[in-house]
Image (cartoon, rainbow, N blue to C red; front, side, top):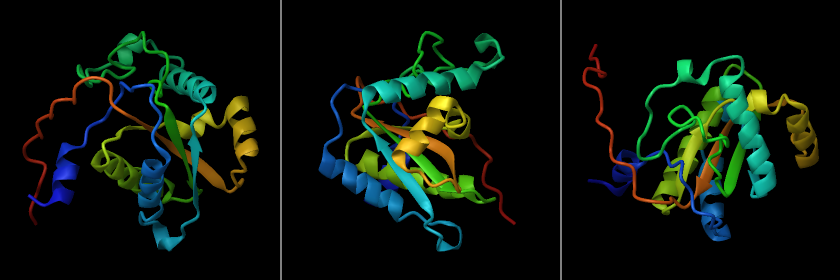
Length: 194
């Protein structure tokens, strides 16, 4: 099997992280992969904010978790995601929606109908690069809601994120704590031929 395909097939969401920070040279390779992701019309009008401040990541992670369950009973929106790497939907005692990841990448892209596409492509490139380099990752949504809070707005200004960009996603990075998650089977019948 080609190594690129093997990386794709063995990538998993990691939600249990060691405290050890991602080394700078490894992080730079991951970020470069994100910069080389396709964007609508090759606009390249995006920003990746790298946050390695544990306090900020913790607070944003708590806001993110709150946004997930805002106005809802967590027990009613839950479903089993992973016994190996539990999510906030699996375990309601997890209060940090970023799972204590030592590095969180916040993806801001041009506010357009392609915003989510551009962010998803960047995130997937970085996730695959991280996996290939031995770093765990997990894609987290709800970024727009998080950065619409007063704390989120303050951070956007502090970080110098242009006003015409919208927050779309977060990518948690760090070294996996514990064994690798087991591969989940793929559902049948998802490929149709015309």
